[in-house]
Length: 83
Image (cartoon, helix red, strand yellow):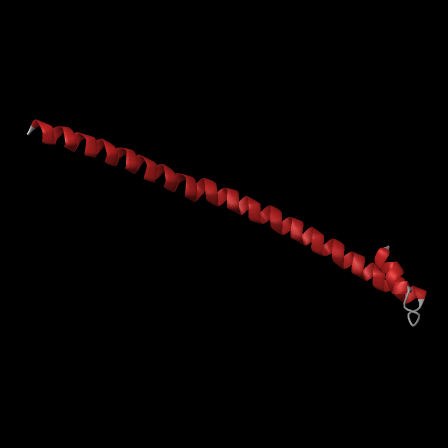
């Protein structure tokens, strides 16, 4: 509505053309908004999937490796004292 009023303020444009242009702009705006929302949903879903499928398993492997590494180091420290 605001755009329509701004466009109507131009004296050289007929009211019919102003309404047509305003409608085109509104359609464009709603299409862009819809496309952006779809993109945002898709991106977020891909982010969650990647997080679950790659990042979390990698972190778990690193954590278990770290735990294993710590256990080995503790064992070696004890073994040193016994020798």
